[in-house]
Every structure is written in structure tokens, then in C-alpha cells.
Image (cartoon, rainbow, N blue to C red):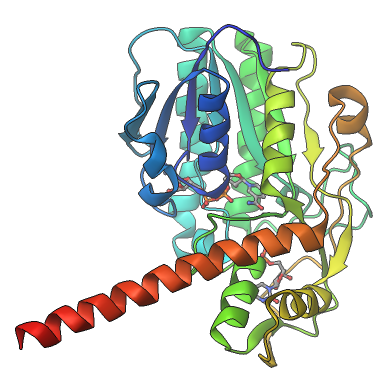
Length: 335
Ligand code: NAD
Ligand code: UDP
């Protein structure tokens, strides 16, 4: 597992949802962590407890621009990229540049420092899959000119760059194909399904199910995913991947809505909205390779993970509404 010697680790996208949990884990292991993020979809609040830690440094920077770090560097986790379809489609050209230029810049850094580097790739490289569940050998069915392509093709190109840097320059690479991951620290306006449903249910607003809700996904709790990323990074050098990391329990989106309503005890209704273009009909990882080679198995039950996520958002929403009340009271006092 994690080496006992302290390492110098760079996490790009470290102020985001998954990245901030990864930073917590790496600090806990005794490593020195540089978190690089341009805060596009990240939140300094996610890393607030780390900001004064002596082994933690935050660097506000965009991975599309080259950068240098002083001193030795042992590991790079490249997570910088918006992951929510709504967010990555808001500026598709910026997303493509982040995927491709970002990969080039971190790979150059890995080459210069002799660092091992892990790419956060995605199940989206399989597009709307014809093979189910998806093994790593499946080459995917991506629409290269559709609205999701900026992300799907960007991540595919990043994988290509990783393997070419490995073949041409001997860079030690690891590629994780991450499937839908959820949990605390998703942004409440992130746009992905679990955060949308939980926040809507807590506010008593209708749950926005796109299409008839029969499309499926397989949801992995964030702590399990971070276990998988760490195991992959510290696996023997010949274990480059790509490896699927996700929870193979497949659920229809309509079923997620029902689970969230039950979990929150909400009386929200369900509002059906049009299915977005190219929305994959079904998705489930074949994780036999990760099980066999990394000894990884996601352990968190979906109901348990949703309960933890719902408590997190309940706390966030309560804190936000008491801040609004305080502000109102201050204004009234001044008036
Ligand atoms: P997120 O949006 O919460 O985090 C991404 C982070 O990257 C944010 O902090 C954002 O500010 C930062 N970022 C974006 N563009 C950047 C840039 N140009 N320069 C520097 N920083 C930048 O998303 P997440 O869910 O934490 O995903 C993290 C990574 O994992 C992403 O690369 C994503 O593609 C991948 N992934 C996530 C999932 C998932 O379900 N969460 C699934 C597959 C792949
Ligand atoms: N979805 C939904 N309501 C929402 C957000 C998403 O029904 O408010 C659906 C979306 O159409 C997709 C699934 O939930 O079929 C997962 O969407 P998400 O954006 O979380 O991730 P994706 O797997 O599509 O990248």
C-alpha cells in the first residue's frame, strides 16, 4: 500500500470533490502535498482544514499553462478537469484544452522530475456503450461531434498522451477509468445527479429526472474511490492500466430518485425533463482487473453512502440559511 517514507505529491484539481478527499488521505499518510487548482469547479472550503498544515501547499494555477515546482517530486495525481456534464459543456473548448494541454504539462513535469503519474480518466471513454458491463478492453462508442465529446475525446486523448510518454520517454504512468463517484464535497450546484437529487429533496423541490429515468449508472462512494486511486498509484510499475474503478452495483436513475426521497424523508415530487443529447443509456464497470491486480473492492453500500451525502448537504444548507438569517438581522439592526 502507501510507502512508509514521506513522499512529495502533486494533486492537480485538489480543491475539487475527489481531489480534496485525496489530499486529506495523502496528508494523513505523512506525505507532503501540493494542491494545484484554478478553482473553476473546486472550493477552497474543501481544503480549508489543510490550508495551515505544514506539509500542505495550495497553488492557484491553471493546468493549461506550463508550471514548475521546486524540489523533488515523487507522485502526480492529475485530476484537474470539471467532471459534471453541465460544467464541462459550459465551455467545451476550455474543457478540451484542460484535458489535452493539462495532460501535456503534467507529463512534462513528471518527465523532468522522474515522478510517477496517475491520470484520472473516465468511464466516458466508453461513450454510450454497446458492450455491457464495460471491460477495459472495450474501445468505446463515443460521438466525436456531440456535446459530450469535449470531455470524452479530451480524456481519450489524455490517455493516448500518457501511453505515448510512457513508450517514448519511459514515464511511469497509471491510468484509472473512474465511474460515477459521489459523496460529501460535491458542489450543491454541481449539476450531477446525486448532488442535484439530494439538494432538491432537502429543499422540498421537485427531483429533476431526465428522460424516463430508466437509464442506469453505477455509483461509487468517494472513500472507496480514493482507496482505489492510492492502490493503483502504489502498485508495481508494470501495472499501468487502464483500470476501471467504480462500484459495479447498477441502478436506474429513477431508482436513485426513490432512494434519495426515502433517505431524506422528503415529500418532493418528481419532474421529468428531456434527456440530454448522447446521455449514455447504461453504464456498469467490469472491475475484475482492479480486484485481481490491486486487491480493490468498493465496500460502501449505496444506501449508506447516500445517507452520508445527505447529512453533509443538510449541514451545508443549514449553515447557509443561518448565515442568511444572521445577515438579515445585522441589516435590520443597522437600519
Ligand atoms: P470536480 O469538478 O469536483 O473537481 C475538478 C477540480 O479540477 C476542481 O477543483 C476544478 O477547479 C479543477 N480544475 C478544473 N479545470 C482546471 C484547470 N484548467 N486547471 C486547474 N484546475 C482545474 O470533479 P471531480 O468529481 O472531483 O473529478 C476529479 C477528476 O476525476 C476529474 O478529472 C474527472 O474527470 C475525473 N472523474 C470523476 C468522476 C466522478 O464521478 N466524480 C468520474 C470520472 C472521472
Ligand atoms: N440526471 C438526471 N437528473 C439530474 C442530473 C442528471 O436525471 O438532475 C441523469 C443524467 O441524465 C444521466 C444520469 O443522471 O442519465 C447521470 O448524470 P450525471 O450528470 O450525474 O453524470 P453522467 O454519468 O451523465 O456523466
